[in-house]
Length: 407
Image 1 (cartoon, rainbow, N blue to C red):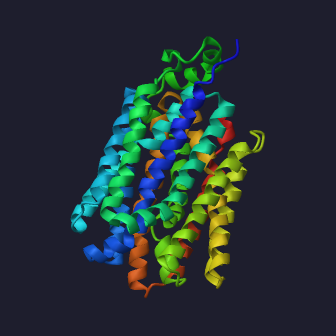
Image 2 (cartoon, helix red, strand yellow):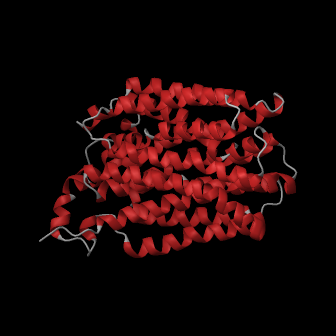
Image 3 (cartoon, rainbow, N blue to C red):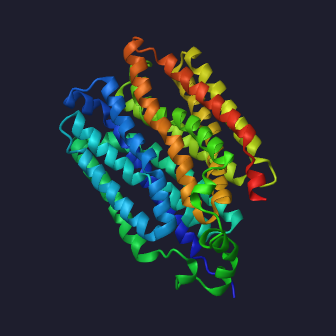
């Protein structure tokens, strides 16, 4: 008898949640204009709003990852998706800077549990060759969800205003959680749709993730690889957060585009980033992952350095999209390395990397706002810091060998 294909439904759940998460996360970049106007916020204050999400996202990563490893993905994912969807809706109820900061902080705490637990879920339900491809697809769909967010959010804001727009976006997460809770099981062996042939196919993955390998989670986090893995993700996130925070503003103020045109161009880095993730996932495992990561980050750094010297906005955005493509080549590599190191603590290791990376999401928007407020809106300085971060990430991969971890 042929193996059943229940595991592909798990992939479908991961892909759709990745899209929903990024749509909800990125929408605020398109609402930044009406929010700052209505609530009378400066660029520095709006940078603080962007960063409030990233700070809580980072701080709650390890607790959310540990919860998934200890309590199971089914329970934790359902709860956090409902939680962050509630605070997505409450974003539309903000009446001043403080209320907006509180809501976005709580929103970030909920989303912190997403990708570490999805990584654990895919690792238990897929064999290695399929796991790498599924990771690549998951990040691609996340990026494409983010790419859809600017035009979708702009349309929703224009139709309903920014307040009701966040309520509409929140419903996506609640609908997903209802279907996920009804279908998913933590262990494939407990699911009635999995036959013995498919279960045999997944035995190695179940042994890797669901069984105790005799190490404590805090011992794993003391490894040198974890420090460099987090540092390279810090550099990656520092650059990436520009695409989902300040990019529409840069296009309007530095390049003179309308809000509609800026929303259209803002799609490109996330669109190409998703393609980069897929390309990385389909590169044969025989190609050293370390050198793919180094090449991706060096390419990103060089491309961003060129952008200030390009006058044509179409060419500038093409270069920025290629920079995003290059850095996203590293995404499946980074997250699969977490699986190989973490084993039954996959979600904890992944959340640690994501925590360290997303501290950059806290730093980058605030630092960008401060630079702009104190440099007369010199966007080129902001771009130079992004390039430096990408060079830092490339250097980190000289000390990480994901292929050795797998062996």
